Image (cartoon, rainbow, N blue to C red; front, side, top):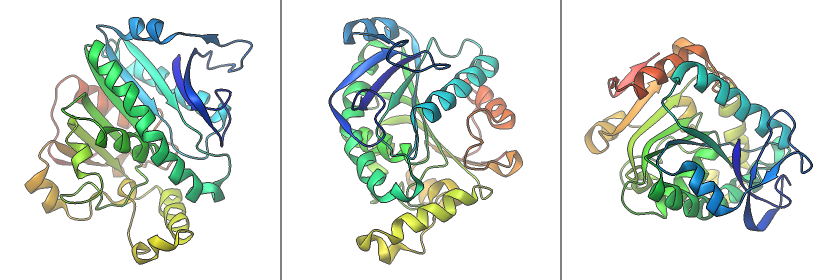
Length: 277
């Protein structure tokens, strides 16, 4: 898989690199000895004129975690989506290697946003279309990136288990403007995601300026705090309750119920604005 990395030495879990690096990564055995360096020109040639799916992972993801997750997503996409995408590519940022590192990883997710924005802009200019699929804290990175852009460079933004406040995409909130940078935003949430509910609150408890929000829930757990706001101000945002798929935090990579729904969505079947699997 063609991958863009903002990590030091491509896979360092905590350090940003000075500049981004691109490699063709053998997901089954990611290593410097096996991966092939790719130039920016070669990367853009590979996505030129094609429908592109860009993957953005969450926090607490080592080299093996990211590679395994992206391999599972790519396999599920190939099975369910058939020819919906010409290229599936990945982005990786230093999300840490420990659960207790959430507060620091949250800051890195913010910092990775502008770097990802550069690539979104470049890919969108040459690709036939660009969709972004992000998981957990990767939603913060993707939304920070889109908030730095203009227009609608992204066709579909797929937010899975989003580790952001459940009111943050509503009008006047942190990521409202960023959601306008995509033609459609698909929010998939699940109350079976106990890990997200626990670690999101624990992480906020370690951030003094977040103490007043300790009773907030993550978007990926509860869905939007005020559904009426989404209906009134964001008709392009579709909210999917993963109840029927029993989606735990790590079940989004290849869940057959979810991916069957996504296949219909990508084929042009528009779900109700609030839909339950």
